[in-house]
Length: 579
Ligand code: ATP
Ligand code: MG
Ligand code: MG
Ligand code: MG
Image 1: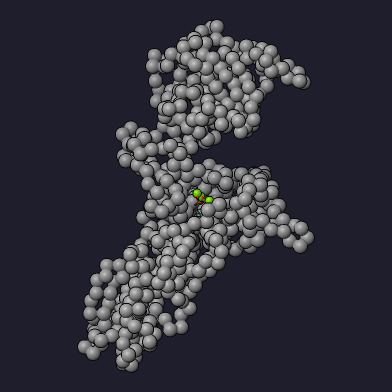
Image 2 (image 1 turned 30 degrees about the vertical axis):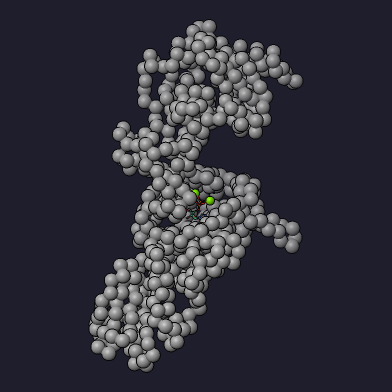
């Protein structure tokens, strides 16, 4: 301790919002360099390295191989996949002296895909999993809570490459199992939840959330079965079959007089003539609000908004209801339109085909003030059922800003949702062929035919893990590390002025080190015992050994940092007791 590069602070840093941030700064683990950007001091670096080595061991154990990419990356690959623009303000962009565009990598799908394309060309080369533990850069809108949401942070990111879908399933399963071992070993109390795939794209995706009130993610769990999902990805309860008689009147019997597509086309041509040619049944509608009347007149008209990214084939409105108004609207107006507030129709619901081949529309108006919407078969023959309504997303999930405790579970009969907060520690994705397609990663299959490779992407927040572990284990007097990630195994404190105490402590430190333990020895000669104990508590090494007055009787004190339990043990037996 007399030479260790550390200064503990008695005062909380002014900008610290959560306890882990406060204590990591006060105990001398990290220092802020800029908002969301931190310098690692020796103590912090030791914890970081221990976490990294647990992750490395488990990645190596599934046969993944370590590589390292630069963080400074060229624009082109990100341009090709569309992420150069998709990321918007979310990434750091730079120019070189020749005015070339670069970015600091927020995640490396493109680069890994290109590397494999560069080197591999046959199905015999696959499967392959490669990973790195490396700094990532994201210009987060709200860097907060210290390491929990940084703008520079360390991520372990791996990528799997397979020829077949079954191969991808297997790579995904192996990564998922490795993650279970990693988060078990790190001592997290965590849940695995269904997730959306965000900026990565792709299909199957799960997150590992450490349970924590300071977490920025909310997830729901079923009280009855093992269903768990991030609220961003809660599924719609699959519609149960209902009898035709239960159907709301407006969706009941469509008579032969039901307006047909011709009515709609006529209406369009009459009210909204096109400049170039008349509307025909093959046209699509977008950037319009279509208002349709129910033919039996028993209910208010139905409004369907079609912003620029959602369009509907006119034919699909056939037989639905009588069009009574069509208003051109731009996206912004449409999204604000009161008829759409709750029941904004996504592509999954509007004009899409379910597996059984049924196309259906959702009535947005019905949803206002309720949590339910009715979906009507476009063919107009029967109601399909009640589905939970909110924003529908293309994969059939819903934006669940309104998911509440007590909502019915989509998987089982009796369960309901319970929600809680968590910190996203890891995320596994099946990317599929999105990146390989965009960047042309193909290999020759057994028949000599070129096939596109299918990929997975798997991330762990390494620096975030430092903070999340600290957050989950600290107490009112300081950090309190679990043994497997602690910066040292033993914090050895020598007290008093007696040279024999320091000699004995020095010897004990050597013996403990020889026995394989990492020892932080507080040899500071002119620091009071009170200050030394306070520092030891703040730094949070799991075992604190004090060599002091008791040495006269051949005793040292061994204290468990977490429980506070103390025991006097003979100095000769101390090593056996601690290993
Ligand atoms: P979040 O939802 O917290 O913004 P993300 O979903 O954007 O995270 P991913 O792209 O899935 O993050 O990245 C993989 C992992 O990297 C995350 O599971 C998380 O542990 C970590 N991570 C992401 N952003 C940050 C950040 N700003 N600071 C620290 N760790 C991060
Ligand atoms: Mg993010
Ligand atoms: Mg996330
Ligand atoms: Mg994520």
